[in-house]
Image 1 (tube, rainbow, N blue to C red):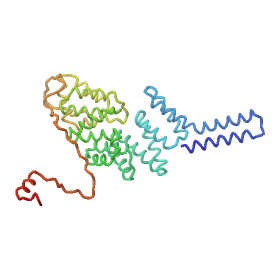
Image 2: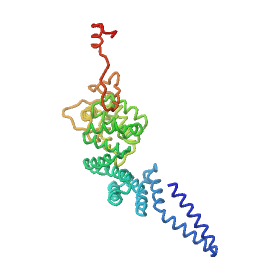
Image 3: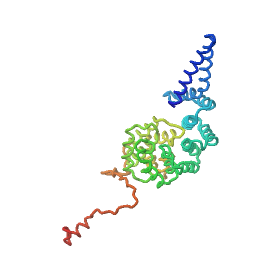
Length: 357
């Protein structure tokens, strides 16, 4: 980018020098320079539209977002460079017309695929979200598998691929991908949230509790961690703490690609706040962690449930006195044998006078 800016600067200086050396009237020189500047602006209009659109879409005032979409369209039509085209499509997917974002990405892949492998993989990773949003989970998985098999790795690939694996019930694949993400997990709230989601569906509630307690302190901007942490609180009968988390989830930033929808969160919150449905709803959430963690309504339970207004409910799991810490297993060609001595081993040594050997 810097090289292009320098090229433009030197070109402008060269044209200015040439114009002013021409033996023509001064007004003609000014007119020629004006035409040159107008031509340069016309050629660069796609960037102008793109920058202006970005300012609108990043505004805190969501009413300005609608003004961004015609600007993105103008930028793309004016010949916007491909990397910015993909970014524009991402904005459509997340906050605008998701179908239009999908169409932009598919058009790119149909006309420009093969010219830049990195851009191809970024576009495929993004368009996989469109397939997932359409309900075609298997197509989304095939798309990210193609990217993964190419050797490309980035944060969004790990977030998307692990999300699809979790949705598909492939917990082994999800865990392997999160482990592979390495240091990216520590800098990506999305990957970290997926690790917590995995703990929930595996029933590792103490690990999920520790993870989300730390993650929530960082105030993630998307709703999923708050809902997942609410599930953890429900598991321990801590209804008021769960209610607080759901309220925070509703204040998060929602997008088309959010796995959690405002309607679901509001429904769960309303039922937990109502004494007549508090116990039933808490039991349903705890009994169906897979659906809730995926952003779906928990399966209803049969029978009658008493009205409750307590902040902490009885009949749920007790918090462990000492939470576990899951140790990471280092990968190696061979797993070393366990050489720790048990009490039985020590007793055998003492009995046979082997302590000095």
